[in-house]
Each structure stands twice: as C-alpha cells, then as structure tokens.
Length: 176
Image (cartoon, rainbow, N blue to C red):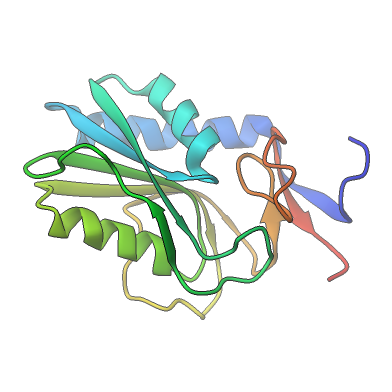
C-alpha cells in the first residue's frame, strides 16, 4: 500500500476472520431464536457489520445509526447524532455492531437509545476493544473480537483522518 501513515500491522485478515468466526458462533447461539434488527454504527461499523451479517444463521433486518465523536480526527469530542434508525425498535431484538470500543461513550449512548425506544433485548458486539483505564462508562460490549493497546488503530472500517477504512487489516499508528 502506498502512502500509508507510519504504522505497523496489528491484525491481518486471517486473524480478523478467526475473531469474527468466534463471535458469530456465540451470536448464533445467543441470538438464534427469532428475528433481529442489526443496527450498524456508521461509518466505522460498516465492514464489520457486513462481514458478521454474512456469517449469521438467523433472519435479520438491517438498520444503521450515525453518531460521531471523531469527525475525521484522531481525538474524540461531543457526541453528534446524525442519523437514527427508521425501524420502530419497540419490542424488537437488537444486535448493535460497531468497529471499536474505546472510551465507551458512543456505544453506551446508542445501546441506551435502543433500550429507551423499547427494544426487548440489546446485544452489543465490537470488532476491537482498546485497552486502557480511561473508560467513561461502566458499560461493556457483550462481545469483543480482538483487543488493542492504547494507540490509534485504523483499517477494516476504522479510519485515519477519514481515509484507509478500506484496508483488509488493522494497523497501529506509530510515531505519534
């Protein structure tokens, strides 16, 4: 790849596939009864959501929410609600999928939003959890694919200044 920011490979595609296969094994048991509404957290959750959906063995509807804290930067700010799901979530089982669980504010707020709308069940899954002691909430995702150190990561849906979401791997920024 040309012009990548200074970084090194953290997880290659085969490692990501293994992690997603493990997550789906659990999801097929946990969510295997009835219909579920997948809520993809845009933009970062797009690739993870599509990959997970293709592996699930139960019927799903697809929705998305667009809530941002980063706005193409590398530091989080205030939550900005851009798009909310169109589907009425009342009495629905919701599978909330996101790319990364960092400080936790975004996923916690979206899970709370789904519950306030009357979802009968909300299960959360993230591809990556960043390991540090700055979590802003007691909320934790139900499923995590891989963990990463307290560094900026990008690829497989996660961006660096709005770019490189299209990498089939997860890279860790270096030299910051």
